[in-house]
Image 1 (cartoon, helix red, strand yellow):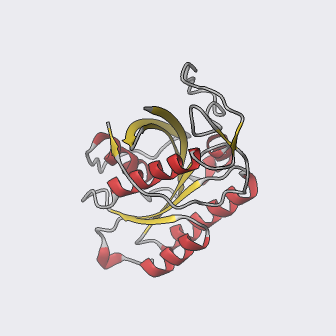
Image 2 (cartoon, one colour):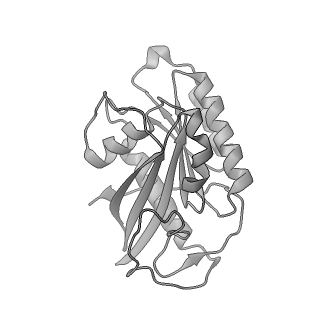
Length: 220
């Protein structure tokens, strides 16, 4: 079985549910009393897909504006980005687009992009139309997901989609510069440790933060 490592960054405004989404998937539970993220939180998860084990190394960034200048430390050389907005707050959808623009300006590597509309359970308060968000996601080459952390809707498919996208990225025909990272000591203070998503192969820098579509599998 191949071991593939993918660095994932989670971006979006404060209060949209970034940390809740990650914790819901990894810990399989909902906590409605999470404190705002300061700087960033780190999570990891192993998923088996086909003949590969994919290790997602997830950097969950703070949504507060005062921490925005720190974001490049976390999204630099990331293999995937989770772009989260609140379906009940149109302003967070607009803010999410600004994160995409920042990635496109500052990230050279090909990335798996996932646009995520959270708080699907609050349908009566919905302000962002699903078709508008889906069209935007398609425009930037991202997959589109609607999630409810409370009800755990869409969470599994979201992470499976990202994981399969990273697997697809690692199998790209543009791969060069073979190297093994099986024996690397994963020092979490080193933001650049995973500039590529695979153990045996290295993805060539071929585009500017353009998304590639993804699919699915599950946490070990």
